[in-house]
Amino acid sequence: MKRLSKWFYLGSMVGGQVGGIILLTAGVVLLVVSGILTNYVLDLSHADIWTLANSLLLILLGCAAILFGATIWYLLLYRAWSVIQDGNASTTPEKAVGFIFIPFFNFYWIFKVWYGFALDYNRYIERYALNAPKLGKSLFLAFCILFICSMVPFLNYLAGLPFLVILGITSNKTIDAVNGLLALQAAATNQ
Image 1 (cartoon, rainbow, N blue to C red):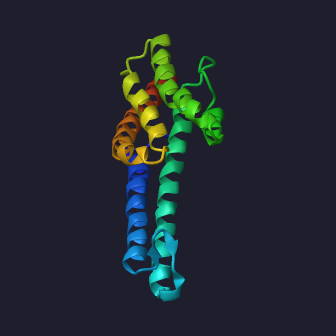
Image 2: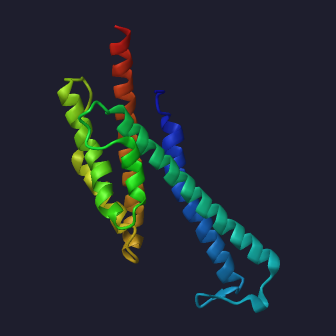
Image 3: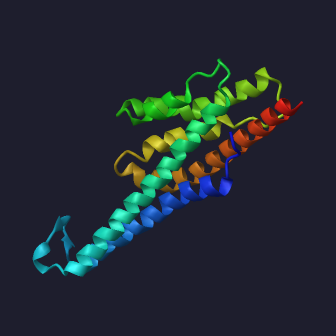
């Protein structure tokens, strides 16, 4: 397995989310300022077709950026679970990613795969007595709580920014952990 590029993963995840939010906001603001979107209803009787098209394009690009960032996070999750598979991991990479897409079950599963990854990773390095830093369990737990809060209407306004910050921090630590294990595994193979 190749090392994970921190710039690619973090840039795609955080950049995709932040860029997507900015594009979505610009699209909605353009709809409101132009008078096309009033009182949460599209009024197409006064619509300028180019303004409407530009607004919809911004909204679609924003959704695509958010989807891209989320996809890269799922890829990171898969790669993270892949590196600790030794027969003792609590789940497989396929289950880790796949079960997140099950509605309502994902509220439980996020704890199992993100907080659980930190626990399993720490057990892995203890089991093999590896010289690698442990992952902070409380940080990964905070991510899971903010992940759920970011899906709750109105609460998501408060949780959104802290969620993005914790997303960047936990993803950075996960990338470092995966790259560290890959380096140790490569060194053990070369001996």
